[in-house]
Length: 257
Ligand SMILES: *[C@@H]1O[C@H](CO)[C@@H](O)[C@H](O)[C@H]1NC(C)=O
Ligand SMILES: *[C@@H]1O[C@H](CO)[C@@H](O)[C@H](O)[C@H]1NC(C)=O
Image (cartoon, rainbow, N blue to C red; front, side, top):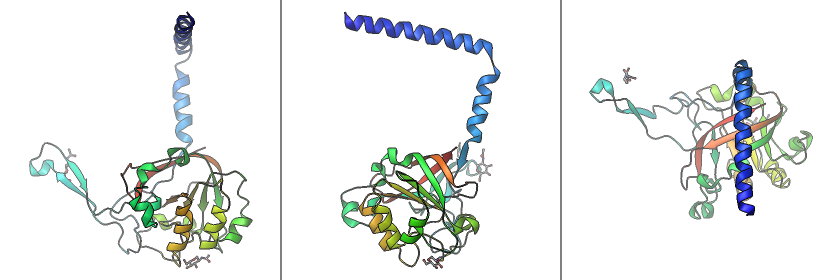
């Protein structure tokens, strides 16, 4: 009896919703397009374009010709179809999984396909790091990251230098030091940290900060383009390629205002 009443009320609600949609649709055709343009303006793409000239770790010449035509109309095929070869899973804007630096995690198949989409999507704070420092514990302490922040993106001197959009790799980039990584894991609400160059760890110690962060399953989000982004609060959306068991994956990321 109860069940029947429930399905009856669902029917009534659906009918009401339908009637409402008819009424509001008839009243204003301008409303939907206004909504769409408002949403569009609110999106900032913070991913780098992947091309042969995109900066790549320790390379002077970028990613190189990783895309080629497997099928080509010029060669008599019915369609053009590109293939990818020799493309690092850590190319451009990307995430790391624990297996990137922790071998047991790699063998335990803690790959990018298992990264928590609830961490990769949600409220995020963009903080500006002063030009004269790497992301050390002292620098982090001074940054006034809102307590409770889960996703923190660091906008650094790298952005001023436009490093993500220059082909030649720059080893002096700003990033997290080992004591900075220790500060981050001592604030267990933080689950994701983003940086505006290819590695979350500074070049002087690539291993230390990665191991500290990945041991606590904090997601490093690397290769962000933050030129258009003012410090502040946003909603982050990242959907990495679901590369099964991989230690890394390229990802498209956006911020919404
Ligand atoms: C297919 O690819 C070839 C080679 O790059 C190009 O010349 C041609 O314009 C492409 N055709 C279409 C329909 O995109
Ligand atoms: C950050 O560390 C790198 C070494 O990884 C160094 O070259 C660079 O000068 C440091 N940046 C600052 C602002 O201290």
